[in-house]
Length: 453
Image (tube, rainbow, N blue to C red; front, top):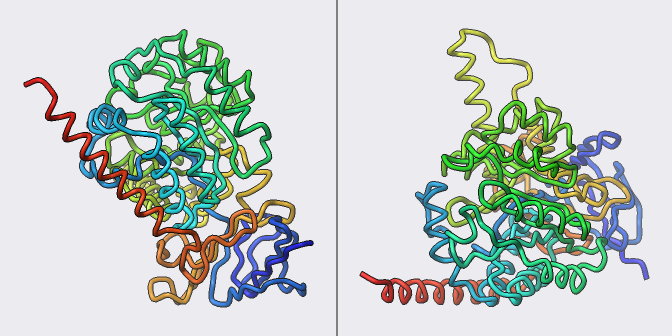
């Protein structure tokens, strides 16, 4: 039996150039798939009245360490160097599988509440074989669309992040692949979260890249950020090892040289930018326009809720403001007008949706309201006092709206938020993540008490 849902009479921003924007439009969903986007549709379906709402594709977060939800806000003033010590060397070794499960469940529900329907979960918390299973369970129970990117353990900063000789365990990656991701067609897919050159010796880097390609897994790696990794020339090292390819996403990329930008573009790689973290923690200027100028389609990500908010509205504005501030300052210094290529509010919506799907390797199924794609749809309440009256619908989303205005969220046609309320068991998720917080803080205190004077 076919299940139909009709989103009726919304201001539809499809992000599909062939459909464009419909100031009053309908979106028909059948069995989880978008089948029509038109000014008016008649169908026997459950009707969601979108009058006064802006209907967009769901946001795509292309890089989040979701396991960190139990320690939200624990490092508000941290630099990147601080993060390695305060989070990866202090909290990460204490995480149990139950903590990871709670973090991924609550973190994924946080995404859905904020209109993020697709997530790349950069999961470098695989301290035991039970940890990845717990992470995947949390994602699955939330109902989000996600790429689970299997990362290293984090039981010792020195062993895993300073010329590490410890490769991600291939046997366990194969086990997770065969157990949870035998097909690449599901709501959850799999990737590999690698540390890369500078953090690992060449033999480990080559082994992890080979493993990913043997198993057909997309690769995601942090590069060119901060005081230390900004000097590694990581993309150049990967090029010299013969490892660049279209299956790799380069996260941050703040200090790529011109040569390295060309290498990424020529190899078909993709770029994920985490603007608020990069500005706040010292990774460098968010390189959104640099990526665009090299023919790339950058996407956005949240990165760590230990230090920044977990919503896409924050990232959109951080990227938009930072890039325009940088260009405005350069033009003022040179006493010349700003270029016509300045980022626009409309571009930011494309970067947060369609580009995100492209970077996550899921553009064939999400990122735009296109018939044939899966129904990952968000409705923004445009009657709210911080959004109305609407003159430019795209700008209303990118520069006016916030999480409180996310009224309706569908993933794969399933309604996860309606009338501004999550439909899942958020009380249970909040209880579990609170218990994880308490256990981690207790374990941290006990560890500190045992440390030698």
